[in-house]
Length: 267
Length: 267
DNA sequence: TAGTGGTCTAGACCACACT
DNA sequence: GTGTGGTCTAGACCACTAA
View (cartoon, rainbow over the protein chains, first blue to last red):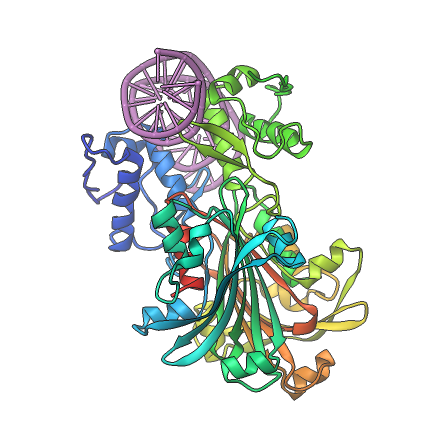
């Protein structure tokens, strides 16, 4: 059946788990178009023989590839390569103007307007799940692309989680990279809220737009694995310079995503 | 160690897979707060004994619960109940004004402004990945909450995929429910783009807002499992009545989500 | 050192899709 | 029927964490 000799480049001495190696191998085949979209993959039994691993390994690899949207499986029919249209790798992402510009080789800049310890307002306390009035670090930044102001961001983090942050220069450094590299802090989950609002006078001045022109208000809360809120930020993006993308994928139980989609777009 | 007697309500005669039953059982314990947030779950070995199933079953159940954000696992430490703050169940969802209102008991209405077969414009053809000029079904709908217009939606589907749709009354029926119930068509993935735009004269009239007031423009493409685009829609939501929520969760490989978050919020 | 989750094996039976 | 993916068993060894 399969005329392709899937190269069995599994290295059993490697510290890399076998299922990861299988993922990589299949990934290569798909990405190099040796397995074109719509093509049926060898059955799990044959993959076991090809890679000389157990079915558990094959299934774990296929499961991750399915989650990533690279393949889809159909009981009784087989496993097939999905159309690669959806930007590969991942369940969801929320992208904006920034990385679009970075991808195009532009270099975004930041100006820190404010970076100090303040008492949490009621709203900030609610988002960060701390006491009203507790110390938080507030960081106001205005960000530019090609010297054009694009987004005004106010970030809040609980002071006690990262007191050192008060002295870190965030004009040229990613907050997330700093937290992960210096403190081993990783974000496990996040929540975003988007609204369209008119610019007030201050915002209009900073972003150099007309008063009342449409802005995207993006509220974000990020959580650690145990559910502790790490960061809340409130960002105002110029409507004429921002576009956000969200990729969705159906979760295991049939109906889940369909349900959600229905909620959004129909009565 | 565990003073709780996890009721072992596994029914081996049931057609429901064992791992689903385990998920449900653990879910119940977490949701009823018998396992409070932060609490360590029994180890996998003990869960095997409790439910009298193999470790494969337990691990499959725990994996799904982890994906759903209900628990988190730490090698060498154990499995713990996550803070349930993030709206349960799911990797991501994109919700808007509609279901918020439905959840509050309000009843959204729709008016179909247009529903006909038209040739695909260049843009629609690109989104649906069909030939320019090919037949598509276009459906324009204006949607209301409490007799207040909230969103103006234009939907496009390839005519050949669902020609019957041209005659279906969608004023009182969900498009997704219709496709799934009548044709067994399920959406596997989707993409959303959000922007803030000012209302033009026609939009302002229909949505009863001032010209130039902020609207959320939501473009959506939905795909079948094999990657075929099923539907494209273009929706304009009143900015003063709409708020969108996106939940994100880190994908297996460490760094993935952190990377994306970094892209959004920092330089 | 003991317990945990992470990875892996070599089987098994089933429901489903296709021919 | 034959092949497919879905579910499940009863083991095993490992690396990591914490006492």
